Image (cartoon, rainbow, N blue to C red):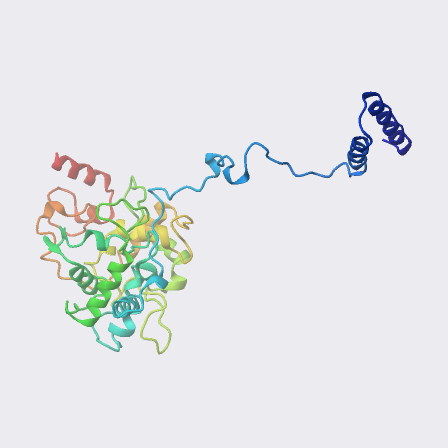
Length: 358
């Protein structure tokens, strides 16, 4: 309203109040409210008061805004290192982590404690010291060991599993089970998986599944992928990169005399393909992969076609019917060749194994 219109409106209110007999005080109060409303800016927002109930008993927020408990399939995360206690037991866990992360410095060819491995670190295969989701982590070790393993045909404890890695992936010699180093590594590995319960299904453990190929994996295709995406870190000849004067590799060798031998888990190309799909090249992760499934299979075929140390595996898989579909060494209970067991196509082998079980 314009100012003269406001005055006319106030005069009208005075006449009305005189007619209905309001007291002078009431008229003054009423006029004050009207004037206040007229002079306030038109876009001013006044606070809204809830008169029906006090604030502390207001109705709950809609279900969509209420904080939810973590889903059952939420990605596994390792415990926070800061929670390792400042005790002798905590010191043992910390030493175990140091051994996993920097194995070569302590147990490699130039190790300060022993010389029993090839210069690779445990975390070259178990990324971020065994804590990375889908990075071949240790999440399930504490809740599943001791357990029966078909490869040895025996019930194995964590110490046996660690020594399998020393003898296969690190192409070395075993640690004594009661040694300070073994007990520290076991303590750390169990600590990593301490929050996972027996038989609990946890997302992000071990390796990430990928689609099976309808064809054999191709070392030829894999060679081109390696040259394009891998050799910058791992070398043209798969030799890895070791800084001058260092006891450990900055990037590990993928074949040759200092790499894992043919008895290692990564020598099965399904394991290698799953591993690189979720973690390689450098910077890749399970939710931001840089390789297609086909590229991962072909890369695995190429790397595992290259020369490497040999392991005496005559005592592996005492029940040959338990051999995995991509275990590349006979004898087998089926009629497929060693080459097909190594490179595929694997679907016919898997179908035959399922038929055997029935």
